[in-house]
Length: 473
Image (tube, rainbow, N blue to C red; front, side):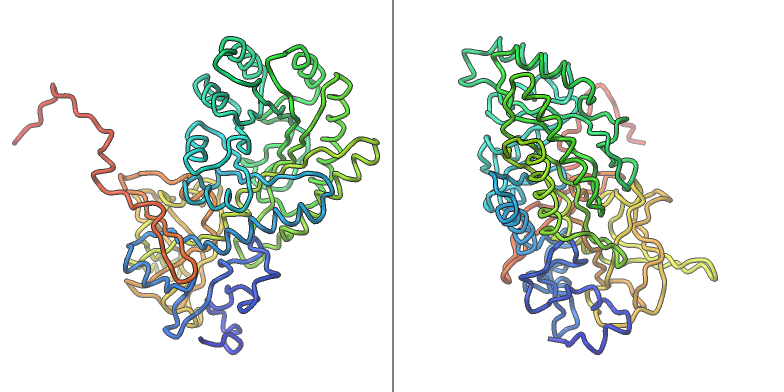
């Protein structure tokens, strides 16, 4: 094992390794740039889960999503255990699977005692097939189809009601299908709490001008309507104020707003069993990012809920939260192979990789910034500033601007950090590129969890009408 002490000052890739390389007990995954098992081996290569990353690329190809099981489980456990430690009432962590919905991720989170938050019929189907107990699945979304609602009702999961149309549709469906459904459908009500937070405009969901949830001034009418419905089982309320949040005050304010809404529901003779404060804790994408730890966030949220209930002399509800990015984001990296280089004197040097906006659309969509290392020469000092470009026919297909790297050459293995959240889940086949494979690593073992798509997969749903004749000339 190469020592890091004498090399960190040279600004090499080693600086990104977790601060406590030999003891990860106290590490909060969302505060690290690389997964918790990251090490540099005797070949000067990056290791994850005890496996050589360039060797993984050689075996499975690139681009390649590499998911570290230890980091994923650690984040799940830290949320679960911190809630038990700081919240005196019942609690449940829900993994927000929109961050990355696949069988393996859902199953690992479920094995750690987490429930699953889904936002579509496809995510619900994935969670069910992963073995998640339907009673621990919560179905969100602002425009659920009738088919999706029927599916969720049949499965027995909790439906987080977002609007009047959905609420009235549920009543009609439950009334129509009373004989088929053994129990009333459990629902929560989502509303917009009117809390702003400093994050990207596209991912602020808690302010008043939002497509999500009922307005606060509608709650009296909503609770009155629900109280008149015998076919629905009202269990609680939900709000979410955004994602990639580093501030703590918005969630403290949210606890007060939620408990006030709880009082309003009780005034309408509705018993609130659960309050879901959403998620949103940020992660460290770059050196300058400084998010609160998972435990600190949970402690703050828990104490805010306890204080809000005590101030109003109300019983503690079951407390739910739904982190996604902070669970899976830091646990994964994406490995690429470097190809061409273009130098424009006194302007820019472009380095191209064999992926881009189809496997990571966040830079072009949100102007997101990532950290990067050359995985096959981890200790070499950074000597040049480059722009890392994808291979798509799109000028905006830029993964990272002004990245500091050692001098690279074609064939080097480039690793982009913290790509577990919203990378595969938002991936596309733009330019007809097959989506990458994903592997799970841990204890020196590797398992494929998503197979690499082939050209044949791209055409699997294509249909060429027989009446179209192709010219042979």
